[in-house]
Structure formats: structure tokens, C-alpha cells
Amino acid sequence: MSPEAAPFPVRLRLLLAHKQKTSARVRFLRFPHGLTAFEALPPLSAVLEDAPESRVEPHPNLYLRGAEARLGLATGSLALEAEFSAQVDTPDGPIQVRLATFTDIDPPFEAAASLGGRFIAITEARGCAPAELDLLRQAYTVLMG
Image (cartoon, rainbow, N blue to C red; front, side, top):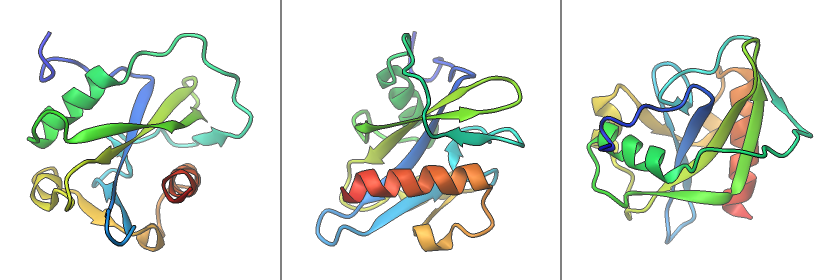
């Protein structure tokens, strides 16, 4: 199955971030619907602080390749941040959220814009859903670790 044809699982979302290698400036890709690629978290979502370890989780590399294809980026443009894994409680059941970072020196501004998105600093996230703000805080902590 090609990455373009690989559907994102209903129970997985990605946070997409870029960390400048020279200055450590961190920016997150914000879509028109919110911060998770490529679908919004449902209303009433809440991050589980003490989430039980998932016994079975889909390997995210297939979905990273799918995200690259959706953004029109080359293979290898996204890398998984293994230290970040969060679980969000939703009315329809838990959703796993993983963090991926762009590997290029500069953020892919044009690719983001093609999907109606833009890169924001964490301080520009006001107005996001509380669950998204919590995910950003955790992701920022991992990236700046």
C-alpha cells in the first residue's frame, strides 16, 4: 500500500512541530481545525495524565509517510519523537497522539499553507481547545528536554 493510500487510523493523531537546529525555536503546525493532523480532536476531549500503557499500537512510520504525502513533502521529512506519547480521552474512546518533527532546516511553510495551516509558537496557541493546549505543553517539554 502506498503512503498516499494509507488511511490514518481513527485512534491516532499527530502533532507536527519544527525545532530550529541553530536557535532551538519551536513552532507547531496549526491547521484550520486545530493542532492535530489531519483531523480535529472531538469536543470534550481531555488528555489522560496517567494513561495505561497501550499494549498494541500501530507503528507510526507508515502514518509519517502518509503525512509527508499529504503535505507534499519528500520521504524522510518527518521523524517520530519517541519520547512523546499521549492518550486523549474522548466521548468515542481513547485516541493516541504522537509527536513528529520536520527534519529540514526551515519549516515547510508552503506545504502548511497548501492545507490552510501555519506554523505558530506555543504562545500563539491561545484559543485552542484545552486538550490541545495540554498536548502542546507536553510536546514542548519533550522538545526542549
